[in-house]
Image (cartoon, rainbow, N blue to C red):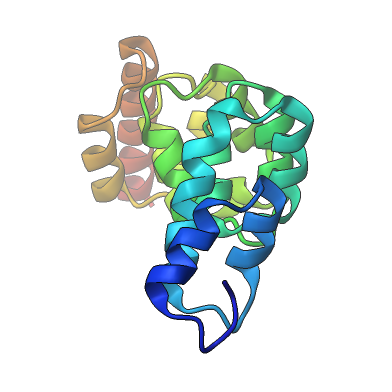
Length: 181
């Protein structure tokens, strides 16, 4: 299936027959055309429901970005914790996982304290929009965002009203502090 002279229709038939880890290896080969890689990744994502926990953890370590993004949404914490360590996971995938309404509180808490992902501005903005973000971390993230942008974020945020109110008060006090300087 990965040979350069294999006709596309035959390669497509062949990759549908590959085992899970063979499909993973196929999708990571540099010589494979992009459309076949994408098809292999989509097949892997479709198979995730029937893959055992151990296999999902092993996949999370070495899979492509598309499959790792799907594994971030896994209900088992060991799977998404391993996927977060995958070098192919992108900031966009983490943000997308945080924006989902079914993102678990444990996942959000882990991202809030993660040494790599909690430092990224886009991830921080996504955390400020998530209902499961702890108040202390929300306050910390909000203080590093410009006030006009923070107002827009809070307007569309799913944070609890009590947390939003606290962040707005903090924003007002920052505005008064800057005006008095």
